[in-house]
Length: 425
Image (cartoon, rainbow, N blue to C red; front, side, top):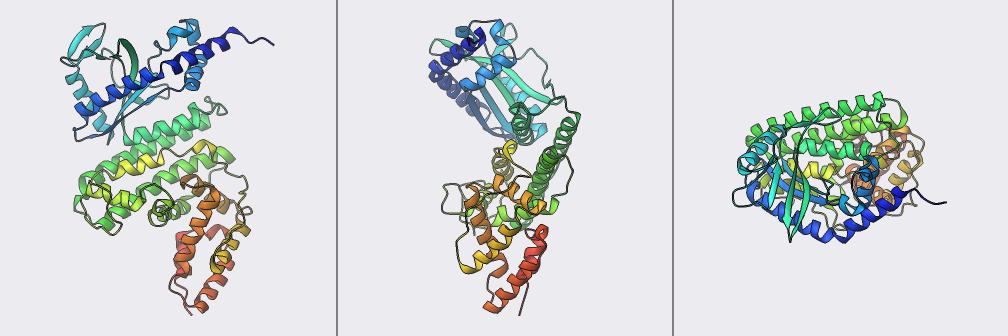
């Protein structure tokens, strides 16, 4: 059966983008380098990132917005305003306005038609005649500016966004849960209410981050870690509570499970494992506290700096839409030491029968870096170390007996681990 013309159109457009991808990438690199050099030294600035749309993403946009009606397939690639997307990231909501003001001061040469360029650099233009921030369809504000950059005789359009840590985090969540997931009904009031609730919570997180940033300088490293654990637990709890409710239709409390996961992330996660190339999370934290290169885990220097950057960057790349809440886990047979095997058997026996334990591991596996079997092995090693470390064989037997008698939904909780760890002869 013959396809309608639009399918041929989007294929041609995708091919044109791929054929010109090198030019788009070099133009994006040139643009981001200029923005980094110009605005990177501002205290509020975290960094500059960029991306060039994939051909599949362009095809989706053409269909979604009926762009094939206005331009030829050969023209559309150079007409879409956000083939290049550039983002200047900053710490807090209030910093977005500061950066926008600095951009207006820098792009001060009026070129007409609403476009402005920096002094002596007409190859980069921004359209600054529209009010900022603009209102998105979801009702929230965003600093989003159209522009173009000239490179090697071609002009490439781009979209510049200014986003705080929390707004960057939020946009990733919304993008993955809604924009890229056609199974969600965007007119669903329940979904809108949950997303609004998440955004309100993140707004509160931004305020807390700001307060901590301003006041934490005199705190000890341990005090800073405690505050970070609370903030990270709050974020995980808010996001995953909404995901669980969207999957099963029932609100449940996962606060204690969020706390337990955060404890693991800070003390036993794959970031500490030599089998990955990822810098250990504790080293990342201490590097951010110091404001320099990643130190050894026992380095206790306490200059508070960009800690939130690392944590939020890590969290916002989780694929939330793929979390299969309510589905059974299928893990390979666990093989390790005798005591770890015994601990693993307790979890494996209950993992697909208890809702809370099942949900805990869905969240846990989505946050860890390896495959599910590797993550489970890391967790069992961590759990066994926590409850068995330094014990005699008799104490281990008594601890294992208490573990077997523990209700399944309480197994991963921090208070359970502490209770088991304290068992004596």
